[in-house]
Length: 412
Image (cartoon, rainbow, N blue to C red; front, side, top):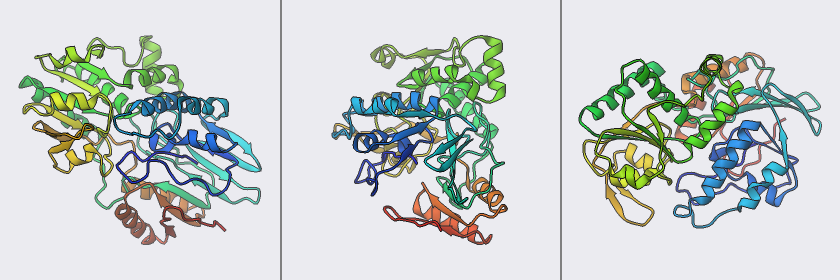
């Protein structure tokens, strides 16, 4: 279940090789830390891939873009031809599907994270069950409903804990959006540029819809919003797979009879050099979200080195990434060519998170525990956050374990 790449600056880009040959590869969503090494499994092993249609379509775009980032990753773990193996071995799964998988019953449930994302519920022939959440968001967003909470009985829960720390409490989305817009209004008023590094899948669409909403309501002044990187291409899948979106958004698409992101202020960047010479205030929404590659580095060098501008981070920043450096107050930032740049722009963070925070993780786990949960396994989080969440759960008499990398855990 999932096979991703390390987006930080760790010692190894790809995960450990499975000790035994897998019968199947199940992919929960297209973000590279869950999907990015999937071609390696198919290159080395003979198995089918169970994946939702939006995920396999979007995943192909993200994988090809990853392979193009030669400045960041000298050695490519696989080729474009290997990426195409996902199509050849694809077995489509849909939301609320039930599939027989070599004696296991596989069921999918909405995880609320990004377009096409699912949780995976597996039941063995003897009745034991496991739920793997992938990435989980229990709160609704502008595009998606929150994760499903009415779930069948679970014996073992394998759950992400990105925001599992004691200090991880997301503010309300309305509060986040209002502060986000007020900050951008200030930059526009002084004639500056706002750079919004964002993940092409999920976060970019939330940011764009927020900007459109506040412009249409008259709160935010109309200025050009330039979209660069893969965002435009990924956003087209939100129109293609509109039935996966929350009902309110489906209604907007039907009534307006136009694309979700078709708006007069939004422009696709066609000539980056021309944009760099603009003297009027504008907003650029661009990849990558952690500043590890992509067009954002061009904007960082030109506009990030000038006071009066704003860099607005909108997602989780992994340790070792340029985004995390900025978030931690470091302003001497290394670039791919080995040079350092001095960031003089203001740096802010808007919590547009697509992950559940600690209170919501605890609520989700407690709800499952009320039906007879045997054990929780915490993964996908910084170690100190995992420890803090484990302490909270054990205080509620919920048996909790933090597996270490490469460990074999036997579920009895």
